[in-house]
Length: 246
Image 1 (cartoon, rainbow, N blue to C red):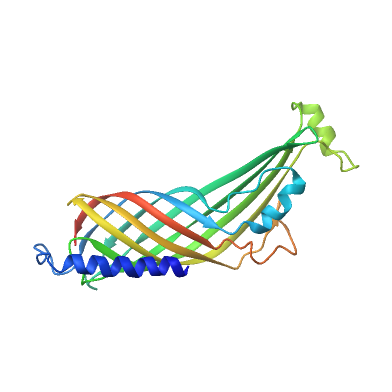
Image 2: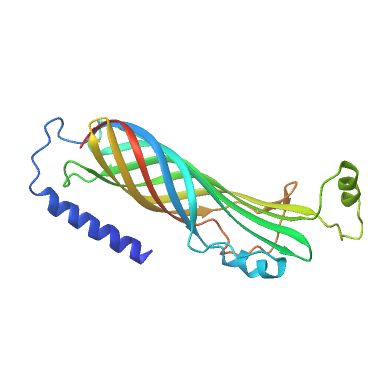
């Protein structure tokens, strides 16, 4: 987080210096317009508590450097409050790990998604591009699916496994899930290529609050580690379509 905010500070100073020679806005005294587009992103979240269990389960560890996500966003400047824009954003991504142990295929799939209402302020001392700070307020979902698969599947054999009271069935799937409330501070840089087309880069950190872990048919799970909570650093890029006057 310290490195992220240091990078943001350097970017702001750099863009401010570059903006000193820019001409005044020819369209509006404050940013105006709006648009939307597709957002490829990169999520980085804490999966250490999962990885400590995967060695015994028989799969590789989940990546600690992050995973690919996609989503979309839209915004519009509200006009009556200069430099303020509102909108919405949503993103989702997944990663997995596989392995074979005792003749059975094993797989772990982790997904994280969130989205909500956005409110941002575009700093007025940088011209020609939009450098905006703000927040996403909304909700999200985490999902962890653990599977063990052996052989082929047959209707009758599946029911035999389900009825196996010895708990030694060769195949099974367990699904952990959690819904949460999120607040995510963000910084975005929107660079118009043309008045109706722009590119975006940005970053943020989604804090996850509340929500209980559930398994399978919504049964509550106890003793889930506090650090396995859905907090998520994300880096976003994208192509935006609309009308942009910065």
